[in-house]
Amino acid sequence: MTSLALFNNKGGVGKTTLTFNIAHTLARMGKRTVVLDFDPQCNISAIFLEEDTIEGIWYGAALEAHVAGCVDAVRRGRGDVRLPKLVEVAENLWLLPGHLELSRFEQTLAEEWSKTMALDNERALDVTTALDVLSDHAATAVEAQVVLFDLGPSLGALNRAALLACDAVVLPLAPDLFSLQGLMNVGPTLREWRQDWNTVRNTRMEGRPQADLDRHDFRPIGYIVQQHLARVDRPVRAYSKWVERIPETYHRFVLDREPPALDGTHPDPERIALIRHFASLVPFAQLARKPLFDLKQADGIGGGQIQAVARCRKEFEALAQEILARLDRMERSSATGAEQP
Image (cartoon, rainbow, N blue to C red):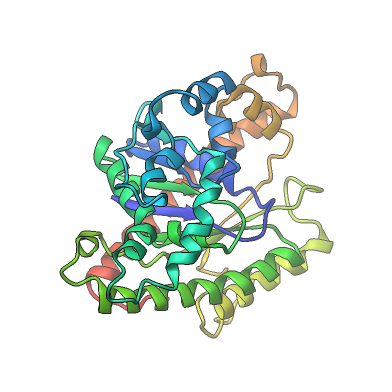
């Protein structure tokens, strides 16, 4: 099983929409896929499920039916992570819905993080690894091959705990100043979290139950750029400069490396895809609770949008294939001990 998050502390870059559509694409490629909604805003749960279904999950008796309920006992110091009750949303695709109450776990995670090095504090490790344990439980329940995390746009304790359970990170970007600044924030923060957690693992976990958890390095495997809303077929000139500045910023701040010499014939190897924004399709897809590439005229689209749906299908298939290829290379390099960013 490989765990993956599309993550950026800049909001509005389409990470939830991308996660939803990538999950459906992977499932149709035969990959058993689980989506975990670790965002207290529950946006991806609202795309997958009808409100009546979510209401039944939230107010039902089964705490294991949503993320907050699964970690509730750990948060309160009264038990272990519950085995999750996943919702099958399509063939080869399952969801563990989110809950707004998950935001209450943020303070607990923040308080316990500084105590993870204390030799007499097992609770700090239990709290910090709760989302990792939950991810393992969810994958085991359906023999998942890929687990996708949907995260909120922050560098808070909740997202830190989620990334500690994550093998790989893809950064979705928009061609603008704010995405560049997001890279400058995210890159150093990921390295700090990885260094701190490796110190904890190497000094505190030997001989403890948490040592049985797989090691996750939340390794960045590339970025996705969504083109600007003003032009669907290519970036407008005013925003081209931001696209051109992304590679240098990504290499320096995320990978902590000197950027390679790039030109039009040698695109940045870290860029997974430059995809259309498909902004005109998103409201229809959310209303129909369908991936973008499943939209039909009966869902309200027409005219040029029909061609956009066809292009969308091809782009997401290529995107999913490239992500799988990068995950495979990551796993092989990890097995051989190659340097990781």
